[in-house]
Image (cartoon, rainbow, N blue to C red; front, side, top):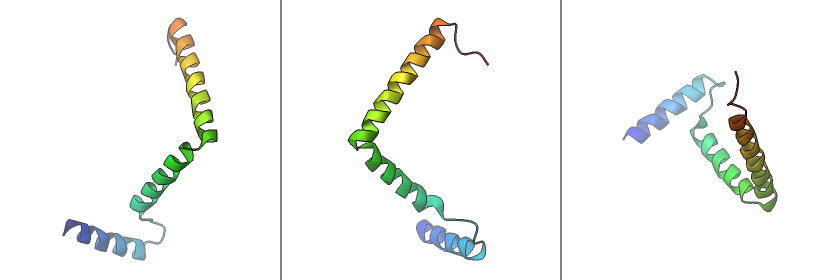
Length: 69
């Protein structure tokens, strides 16, 4: 019942206001796509390298007394 009401309200709003998008499903689609991309060897390698750089930066920040604002 609540889901049906939600769908009706979304339809009314997106019909009346064309600039408002129903992002509920868009965000889900982006999440699924990003998961698939992250499973590729190339993306996995890039993510590993980014993790290494982040770890190095964190170590230097801790040794240097923390991050300064």
